[in-house]
Length: 304
Image (cartoon, one colour):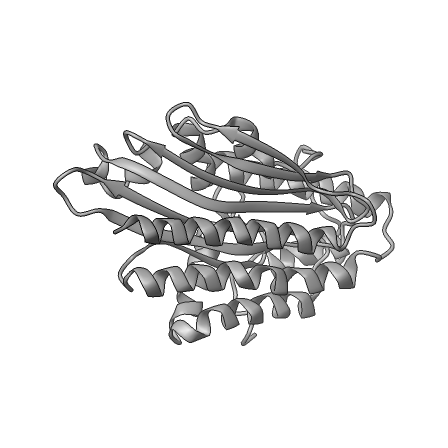
Protein backbone atom coordinates (compact mmCIF):
# COMPACT_ATOMS: atom_id res chain seq x y z
CA UNK A 1 0.00 0.00 0.00
CA UNK A 2 1.58 3.32 -0.93
CA UNK A 3 1.05 6.95 0.00
CA UNK A 4 -0.29 7.83 -3.44
CA UNK A 5 -3.26 5.51 -2.98
CA UNK A 6 -4.02 6.87 0.49
CA UNK A 7 -3.93 10.40 -0.90
CA UNK A 8 -6.25 9.40 -3.76
CA UNK A 9 -8.81 8.17 -1.23
CA UNK A 10 -8.46 11.36 0.82
CA UNK A 11 -8.83 13.58 -2.24
CA UNK A 12 -11.98 11.75 -3.27
CA UNK A 13 -13.52 12.02 0.19
CA UNK A 14 -12.86 15.75 0.45
CA UNK A 15 -14.41 16.29 -2.98
CA UNK A 16 -17.41 14.14 -2.04
CA UNK A 17 -18.03 16.22 1.07
CA UNK A 18 -17.95 19.39 -1.05
CA UNK A 19 -20.35 17.96 -3.62
CA UNK A 20 -22.89 16.69 -1.09
CA UNK A 21 -22.91 19.95 0.84
CA UNK A 22 -23.38 21.97 -2.34
CA UNK A 23 -26.27 19.76 -3.48
CA UNK A 24 -28.07 20.02 -0.14
CA UNK A 25 -27.61 23.79 0.03
CA UNK A 26 -29.39 24.10 -3.32
CA UNK A 27 -32.60 22.97 -1.60
CA UNK A 28 -32.41 25.77 0.97
CA UNK A 29 -33.42 29.41 0.67
CA UNK A 30 -30.84 30.92 2.98
CA UNK A 31 -29.38 28.30 5.31
CA UNK A 32 -25.79 27.29 4.64
CA UNK A 33 -23.26 24.87 6.10
CA UNK A 34 -20.85 26.18 8.67
CA UNK A 35 -17.41 24.54 8.69
CA UNK A 36 -15.61 23.58 11.88
CA UNK A 37 -12.06 22.29 11.29
CA UNK A 38 -10.58 20.27 14.15
CA UNK A 39 -7.36 18.53 15.12
CA UNK A 40 -6.89 15.36 17.15
CA UNK A 41 -4.10 15.22 19.73
CA UNK A 42 -2.95 11.69 18.84
CA UNK A 43 -2.95 12.39 15.13
CA UNK A 44 -5.11 13.71 12.31
CA UNK A 45 -8.30 15.72 12.36
CA UNK A 46 -11.15 16.65 10.12
CA UNK A 47 -13.68 19.20 9.00
CA UNK A 48 -17.21 19.05 10.30
CA UNK A 49 -19.95 20.83 8.39
CA UNK A 50 -23.37 21.46 9.86
CA UNK A 51 -26.43 23.16 8.41
CA UNK A 52 -29.04 24.01 11.04
CA UNK A 53 -32.55 25.49 11.15
CA UNK A 54 -33.07 25.47 7.41
CA UNK A 55 -36.43 25.62 5.69
CA UNK A 56 -35.88 22.04 4.44
CA UNK A 57 -33.25 20.55 6.73
CA UNK A 58 -33.67 21.01 10.45
CA UNK A 59 -30.12 19.72 10.83
CA UNK A 60 -27.71 18.27 8.29
CA UNK A 61 -24.23 17.15 9.27
CA UNK A 62 -21.57 16.14 6.73
CA UNK A 63 -18.27 15.21 8.34
CA UNK A 64 -14.85 14.41 6.89
CA UNK A 65 -12.24 12.90 9.17
CA UNK A 66 -8.73 11.52 8.76
CA UNK A 67 -7.32 10.25 12.04
CA UNK A 68 -4.33 8.15 13.00
CA UNK A 69 -3.20 6.40 16.13
CA UNK A 70 -0.82 3.92 17.68
CA UNK A 71 -3.41 1.28 18.52
CA UNK A 72 -6.71 0.30 16.92
CA UNK A 73 -9.75 0.66 19.21
CA UNK A 74 -11.68 -2.46 20.33
CA UNK A 75 -14.54 -1.81 17.89
CA UNK A 76 -12.09 -2.27 14.97
CA UNK A 77 -10.35 -5.38 16.31
CA UNK A 78 -13.30 -7.35 17.70
CA UNK A 79 -13.23 -9.61 14.65
CA UNK A 80 -9.50 -9.14 14.00
CA UNK A 81 -7.68 -9.40 17.36
CA UNK A 82 -4.37 -9.96 15.56
CA UNK A 83 -4.46 -6.27 14.52
CA UNK A 84 -4.75 -4.90 18.05
CA UNK A 85 -1.12 -3.76 18.25
CA UNK A 86 -0.97 -2.02 14.87
CA UNK A 87 -0.86 1.68 14.12
CA UNK A 88 -3.71 2.88 11.95
CA UNK A 89 -5.08 5.55 9.69
CA UNK A 90 -8.83 5.90 9.23
CA UNK A 91 -10.59 8.33 6.94
CA UNK A 92 -14.12 8.79 5.74
CA UNK A 93 -17.14 10.94 5.05
CA UNK A 94 -20.13 10.40 7.29
CA UNK A 95 -23.42 12.25 7.11
CA UNK A 96 -26.87 12.28 8.64
CA UNK A 97 -29.68 14.49 7.34
CA UNK A 98 -32.67 15.32 9.57
CA UNK A 99 -35.30 17.16 7.50
CA UNK A 100 -37.91 19.43 9.06
CA UNK A 101 -40.92 18.08 7.17
CA UNK A 102 -42.01 14.66 8.54
CA UNK A 103 -42.81 13.51 5.01
CA UNK A 104 -39.15 13.80 4.04
CA UNK A 105 -37.14 10.81 5.34
CA UNK A 106 -34.04 11.05 7.44
CA UNK A 107 -31.04 9.65 5.59
CA UNK A 108 -27.54 8.47 6.44
CA UNK A 109 -24.48 7.73 4.34
CA UNK A 110 -20.91 6.81 5.09
CA UNK A 111 -17.87 5.81 3.06
CA UNK A 112 -14.60 5.03 4.77
CA UNK A 113 -11.13 3.54 4.48
CA UNK A 114 -8.87 2.10 7.17
CA UNK A 115 -5.30 0.87 7.01
CA UNK A 116 -3.46 -0.91 9.83
CA UNK A 117 0.32 -0.80 9.69
CA UNK A 118 3.17 -2.62 11.47
CA UNK A 119 6.89 -2.38 10.63
CA UNK A 120 8.14 -5.45 8.85
CA UNK A 121 4.66 -6.76 8.03
CA UNK A 122 2.26 -6.21 5.16
CA UNK A 123 -0.31 -3.45 5.57
CA UNK A 124 -3.89 -4.52 6.22
CA UNK A 125 -6.55 -2.25 4.72
CA UNK A 126 -10.24 -2.26 3.96
CA UNK A 127 -13.10 -0.12 2.72
CA UNK A 128 -16.60 0.17 4.14
CA UNK A 129 -19.73 2.27 3.95
CA UNK A 130 -23.23 2.42 2.57
CA UNK A 131 -26.41 4.46 2.84
CA UNK A 132 -29.83 3.90 4.38
CA UNK A 133 -33.20 5.65 4.51
CA UNK A 134 -35.44 6.24 7.54
CA UNK A 135 -38.92 7.47 6.55
CA UNK A 136 -41.66 8.45 8.99
CA UNK A 137 -44.54 8.63 6.51
CA UNK A 138 -43.20 6.45 3.69
CA UNK A 139 -44.21 6.35 0.05
CA UNK A 140 -43.62 3.12 -1.80
CA UNK A 141 -42.41 4.91 -4.93
CA UNK A 142 -39.73 6.67 -2.87
CA UNK A 143 -38.52 3.39 -1.38
CA UNK A 144 -38.37 1.82 -4.83
CA UNK A 145 -36.37 4.76 -6.18
CA UNK A 146 -33.95 4.51 -3.25
CA UNK A 147 -33.32 0.81 -3.79
CA UNK A 148 -33.15 1.05 -7.57
CA UNK A 149 -30.42 3.67 -7.18
CA UNK A 150 -28.63 1.48 -4.63
CA UNK A 151 -28.77 -1.40 -7.08
CA UNK A 152 -27.41 0.82 -9.86
CA UNK A 153 -24.43 1.67 -7.66
CA UNK A 154 -23.64 -2.03 -7.33
CA UNK A 155 -24.39 -3.36 -10.84
CA UNK A 156 -20.93 -2.73 -12.39
CA UNK A 157 -19.37 -4.90 -9.67
CA UNK A 158 -21.43 -8.05 -10.07
CA UNK A 159 -25.00 -9.34 -9.81
CA UNK A 160 -24.56 -10.62 -6.26
CA UNK A 161 -23.31 -7.32 -4.80
CA UNK A 162 -26.64 -5.51 -4.32
CA UNK A 163 -28.55 -8.41 -2.70
CA UNK A 164 -25.57 -9.20 -0.46
CA UNK A 165 -25.03 -5.65 0.79
CA UNK A 166 -28.77 -4.92 0.90
CA UNK A 167 -29.23 -7.85 3.28
CA UNK A 168 -26.23 -6.76 5.32
CA UNK A 169 -27.87 -3.34 5.66
CA UNK A 170 -31.16 -4.90 6.83
CA UNK A 171 -29.28 -7.00 9.37
CA UNK A 172 -27.04 -4.18 10.58
CA UNK A 173 -29.62 -1.39 10.96
CA UNK A 174 -31.89 -3.55 13.09
CA UNK A 175 -32.90 -2.58 16.60
CA UNK A 176 -32.89 -5.94 18.35
CA UNK A 177 -34.48 -4.56 21.51
CA UNK A 178 -37.38 -3.21 19.41
CA UNK A 179 -37.51 -6.06 16.88
CA UNK A 180 -37.72 -3.61 14.00
CA UNK A 181 -35.49 -2.16 11.31
CA UNK A 182 -34.35 1.44 11.66
CA UNK A 183 -35.92 2.22 8.31
CA UNK A 184 -36.17 0.72 4.84
CA UNK A 185 -32.49 -0.08 4.41
CA UNK A 186 -30.19 0.43 1.48
CA UNK A 187 -26.57 -0.76 1.39
CA UNK A 188 -23.99 -1.64 4.02
CA UNK A 189 -20.54 -3.15 3.52
CA UNK A 190 -17.40 -3.41 5.61
CA UNK A 191 -13.96 -5.08 5.62
CA UNK A 192 -13.87 -4.97 1.81
CA UNK A 193 -10.41 -5.84 0.49
CA UNK A 194 -10.77 -9.16 -1.36
CA UNK A 195 -11.39 -7.37 -4.68
CA UNK A 196 -8.01 -5.63 -4.58
CA UNK A 197 -7.45 -1.93 -3.92
CA UNK A 198 -8.52 -0.46 -7.27
CA UNK A 199 -11.85 -2.28 -7.54
CA UNK A 200 -12.71 -1.83 -3.87
CA UNK A 201 -11.91 1.88 -4.07
CA UNK A 202 -14.02 2.18 -7.23
CA UNK A 203 -16.95 0.53 -5.45
CA UNK A 204 -16.67 2.87 -2.48
CA UNK A 205 -16.74 5.79 -4.91
CA UNK A 206 -19.80 4.39 -6.65
CA UNK A 207 -21.66 4.16 -3.36
CA UNK A 208 -20.65 7.69 -2.39
CA UNK A 209 -21.56 9.10 -5.80
CA UNK A 210 -25.03 7.52 -5.80
CA UNK A 211 -26.15 8.98 -2.48
CA UNK A 212 -27.36 12.34 -3.79
CA UNK A 213 -29.15 10.80 -6.83
CA UNK A 214 -30.87 8.42 -4.40
CA UNK A 215 -31.92 10.99 -1.82
CA UNK A 216 -32.41 14.39 -3.43
CA UNK A 217 -35.37 13.46 -5.69
CA UNK A 218 -37.24 12.26 -2.60
CA UNK A 219 -36.48 15.52 -0.79
CA UNK A 220 -37.67 17.57 -3.74
CA UNK A 221 -40.88 15.58 -4.08
CA UNK A 222 -41.89 15.70 -0.38
CA UNK A 223 -40.45 18.89 1.12
CA UNK A 224 -43.59 20.96 0.50
CA UNK A 225 -46.10 18.34 1.69
CA UNK A 226 -48.46 19.94 4.25
CA UNK A 227 -48.19 18.56 7.78
CA UNK A 228 -49.46 19.36 11.27
CA UNK A 229 -48.72 18.75 14.91
CA UNK A 230 -49.64 15.06 14.71
CA UNK A 231 -47.07 14.34 12.01
CA UNK A 232 -44.42 16.41 13.77
CA UNK A 233 -44.97 14.60 17.07
CA UNK A 234 -44.66 11.21 15.35
CA UNK A 235 -41.47 12.30 13.61
CA UNK A 236 -39.96 13.32 16.95
CA UNK A 237 -41.03 10.03 18.52
CA UNK A 238 -39.47 7.98 15.72
CA UNK A 239 -36.28 10.04 15.89
CA UNK A 240 -35.84 8.50 19.32
CA UNK A 241 -35.23 5.17 17.59
CA UNK A 242 -32.42 6.81 15.63
CA UNK A 243 -30.77 7.89 18.86
CA UNK A 244 -31.17 4.42 20.34
CA UNK A 245 -29.46 2.77 17.38
CA UNK A 246 -26.57 5.21 17.20
CA UNK A 247 -25.75 4.96 20.89
CA UNK A 248 -26.26 1.22 21.31
CA UNK A 249 -25.19 -0.40 18.04
CA UNK A 250 -23.48 1.93 15.59
CA UNK A 251 -19.88 0.88 14.87
CA UNK A 252 -18.85 4.29 13.64
CA UNK A 253 -19.97 5.97 16.84
CA UNK A 254 -18.15 3.37 18.93
CA UNK A 255 -14.98 3.63 16.82
CA UNK A 256 -14.96 7.41 17.10
CA UNK A 257 -15.47 7.48 20.85
CA UNK A 258 -13.06 4.61 21.56
CA UNK A 259 -10.33 6.14 19.39
CA UNK A 260 -10.50 9.49 21.17
CA UNK A 261 -12.24 11.27 18.32
CA UNK A 262 -13.95 14.64 18.57
CA UNK A 263 -17.19 14.07 20.44
CA UNK A 264 -19.11 16.96 18.84
CA UNK A 265 -18.35 15.63 15.36
CA UNK A 266 -19.08 12.01 16.29
CA UNK A 267 -22.47 12.89 17.76
CA UNK A 268 -23.50 15.23 14.97
CA UNK A 269 -25.69 12.35 13.77
CA UNK A 270 -28.11 12.96 16.63
CA UNK A 271 -31.37 14.73 15.76
CA UNK A 272 -31.79 18.28 17.12
CA UNK A 273 -35.03 17.22 18.81
CA UNK A 274 -36.51 13.83 19.71
CA UNK A 275 -39.24 12.45 21.99
CA UNK A 276 -39.82 9.25 23.91
CA UNK A 277 -43.26 8.10 25.08
CA UNK A 278 -43.86 5.25 27.44
CA UNK A 279 -45.38 2.22 25.69
CA UNK A 280 -46.84 4.28 22.86
CA UNK A 281 -48.76 2.38 20.17
CA UNK A 282 -50.13 3.73 16.87
CA UNK A 283 -53.85 3.76 16.24
CA UNK A 284 -55.11 0.85 14.18
CA UNK A 285 -55.25 1.52 10.42
CA UNK A 286 -53.57 4.91 10.84
CA UNK A 287 -50.75 6.27 8.65
CA UNK A 288 -48.44 5.76 11.62
CA UNK A 289 -49.49 2.11 11.91
CA UNK A 290 -48.69 1.61 8.21
CA UNK A 291 -45.02 2.34 8.89
CA UNK A 292 -44.84 -0.51 11.40
CA UNK A 293 -47.00 -2.92 9.44
CA UNK A 294 -45.42 -2.57 6.01
CA UNK A 295 -42.05 -0.81 6.16
CA UNK A 296 -40.08 -1.73 9.29
CA UNK A 297 -39.55 -5.31 8.18
CA UNK A 298 -36.75 -6.59 5.92
CA UNK A 299 -38.09 -7.37 2.46
CA UNK A 300 -37.12 -7.46 -1.19
CA UNK A 301 -38.39 -4.07 -2.27
CA UNK A 302 -37.58 -4.54 -5.94
CA UNK A 303 -39.51 -7.83 -6.20
CA UNK A 304 -42.38 -7.42 -3.73
